[in-house]
Length: 173
Image (cartoon, rainbow, N blue to C red):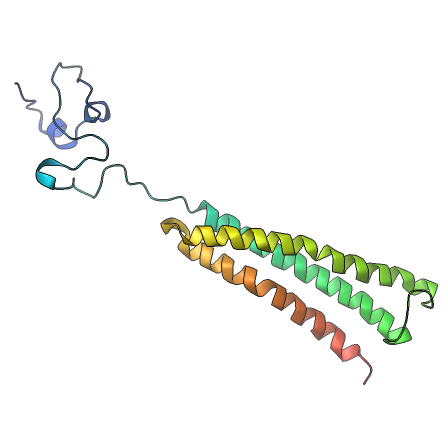
């Protein structure tokens, strides 16, 4: 058996030689293949073969979705609260849609549509929660996944507080 005398090749090897294929020089290279331990049970320098850093993408996707859900929810809450304030200022809290003046019918429609529109940020928030939970299980995206989880959990509370902060000062005593 002949040995390769090139120190660079002995220390680092080549990818096709590590997989058990013969080198173009006709010599098999004795380094273990992918996922196997090195000589004498020792691991190669730098850790295990084939360990790559994990993709931080799922955490960022969850973070972006939770921020979109928060922004959309806040926008709808503010828009709906301002429309409801217009109704409360003119007719008070005791009204129905048939006795409401015609110029406020559009405001009532806005309140209803913004309330139904809150389903969109709710769905985005649920998707973000799932993605954030999965991202926290991965080594490369724990931080962004945790931040996305916190935002997705706090977003409905923040939207409700903003809605009530706009509406309560206008309520009759």
